[in-house]
Amino acid sequence: VLVYYNGDYVPKSEATTSVYDHGFLYGDGVFEGIRAYNGRVFKLKEHVDRLFDSAKAIAMEIPLSREEMSQAILETLRKNNLSDAYIRPIVSRGVGDLGLDPRKCKTPNIFIITQEWGAMYGDLYEVGLKAVMVATRRNAPDALSPNIKSLNYLNNILAKIEANAKGGDEAIFLDSNGYICEGSGDNIFIIKNGKVYTPPTISNLKGITRATAIELLVERGYEVLEVNVGFFDLFTADEVFVTGTAAEAAPITKVDGRLIGDGKPGPITGEMVKAFEEITGTTGTA
Ligand code: PLP
Figure 1 (cartoon, rainbow, N blue to C red):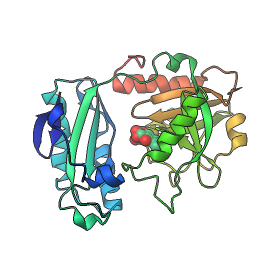
Figure 2: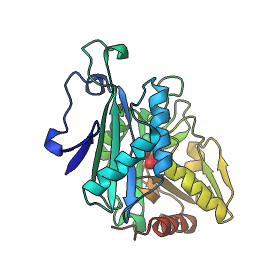
Figure 3: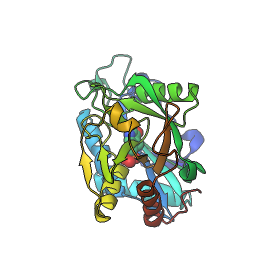
Figure 4: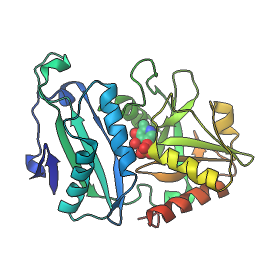
């Protein structure tokens, strides 16, 4: 396995940074999660743009152009001979000292890791995921913007720990106002009477799969409303599904032990799962 490390492709054992890297000391850095299907990188431009936006939001200048970053991502994939893969670019603030002032860090460290990957939920695309609403809130937009895909993923990890403890496949966050927000690593959609609702992205990550799902739904004639969604809407929904680079589109059929609709993936969710299989050229069950 070769990892991109500041312009070189090095064996994974050599892809290491200092304990003084502020990415390690403080979670000071940004990242992306990208998929390649049949040797083609899905939504590369969107992911590279979001990486640069995340960096800009934390006042960090990535020492590559967007084009160079895109080429490095493609080259990492090629060097590892992978066609169905997950790709993880990481840009950390770089090495400084124990003070948290980012001016102490001379230059960001850039890593690109890739590994073979299939759709993450296996059989659950057919039966649906069990979700758990968690006490951990997604960070508020006036604190650390959830739009920044930063190396601070502790809230998401705490959410996952809660879901794991309760036997859930995925966590559902509330936002700081108590509205349904998103999953620990995916955005959420709710369907009622043929209309599709999804929370506005002020409170969650501007998911690239979310944007794709909206496009696919609109193309198929569905009305998609980006509005606040509450408990009531979730528990009375006909269908619920989540979207993400790793999950693609995946049905949620149970929340906190209660059935969503009749407890089976619904027809619009099914259309979305299939639509993603078509545009990515996979079976969805890897
Ligand atoms: N929400 C969170 C918190 C995430 O980490 C992710 C994954 O990147 C998503 C949503 C889904 O975003 P995308 O579809 O761009 O992968």
